[in-house]
Amino acid sequence: MSALTTLLRFRLRYLIALAAALLFAVGSQRMTALQPQHQKGVLQTQPPTPYIHYPSTASVAQRILVIHGLDSNKEYMQIFCSALADAGFEVYAIDLPGHGDSQAGFNGILAGDVIEQVVSLLKPDIAIGHSMGASLLIDLSHHIRFKKTVLISPGTTAVNGLTFENTLVTAETFDIPAVSWFAPRLDGADLRQFTWGTHSSALFKPDQIREIVSWLGGDTSRLRTDQRLRWLDVMTAAAIVLGIALLPYRPPQAAVGAAFSTKDVFLWYIAAGAISVIVLRFIVPLRWIGLFAMDYMISFLFIAGIVLMAVLAAKKQVPAVTLTAVIKGVVIAALVILLAVLAGGYLTHMTLSGGRWWRFIVIAIASFPLFLFDETVTRETEKGWNNAGVGILTRTLIAACIATGALVLSRESAFLVLLLLLFLLFWLMLWFTTAFVARHVRNPVAAAVFAALVQGWMFAAWFVIV
Image (cartoon, rainbow, N blue to C red; front, side, top):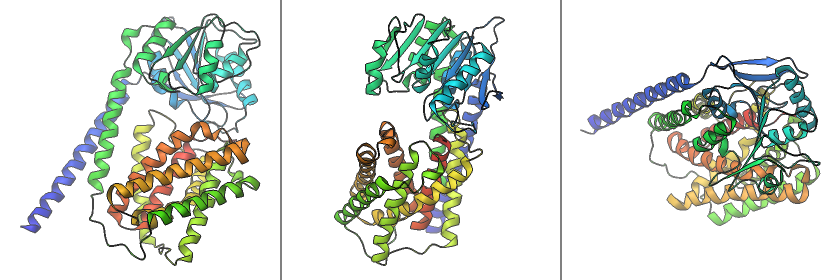
């Protein structure tokens, strides 16, 4: 009976995996069908500018130039741009230098110059910018005007007496404080302060997109934003179910080696965070990877990981790194990254090109010591909700140390503080996902390899190259 039960569970699990895979494929097919016609290319500016072009089906259409914000990309604007195309506009979304598929390094002056070159080539009727992109459009407004302009959560910049006629400005209830202060001060603009939104809500919330399209004079009856978001939800749910079915839960094994108290773990994290902040005051060892402000954060994770691994070495608790464990971690990470690229590609830039490949490898290697300490120690503290609490508090502690270092001792990296909440959410999701993987592989090295590769891929794909 036991053998029969095991066989039935095995078959049921793979039937669920097959159903989830089919549902994911259906979702992908529906997302493709819902996408307006578009193609990618490169504008011959200096440096070259990658773009996505959404041609209009109307005989006469206004052309819109869409500009993303800092640490963003043209893919991040896809849901929004698709709605503009639905409404009958011709749309160009570009990558600024250092972002997305751009091979150039980023700086603000170069970004402004590239936008001016793009405007000269495309001659858009309307310009839309988000965050830093909106700030760059304000700078451009000193000598170039469009028929209409939309500034979505604009970052603060010099206005110098400009009046903003034919301009829509949006801000959100939970926007960045500087944006909430700055947006109402743009003279002559039509200000819309949306409720219950954050810095990027206007790019994804159907009601806010509809209001922007209506202000532009587009046909709101043709918008299909709701359908796209629903199918993205289906793809995400199917990917989660597929992962659970392919990586079934296994009962935990007895801890190998000494168990560590929660108090000890916190003290070690505090010490590692303090040492990292002090070291980074004098030298940022991974500055050479050339990621805007993020080289500080990755260096912090690297130094903290080395310090924590030194603790394990002193206690003779460093796990053996075997080829089998590494292969397991690589295979599971490859599955998760593939699903993330297929589904997440509709929401942001998820692929690696040019210098992003070697940065992926460097970030993964730099992250590995910290994740190996995690998998060796934090999974062995206490069980159930107590163990979850350890994960939440140690991630929060890492974020707090990075914020303290960036604000107090390394002000050139202070930009990090604006994104730390997003990083904290990512680390929490990764920690709990890795906990699931760890229960399946039952090997701290394999789980650490998985976490390091996933973080390396995501950070290399998202961060700005300088």
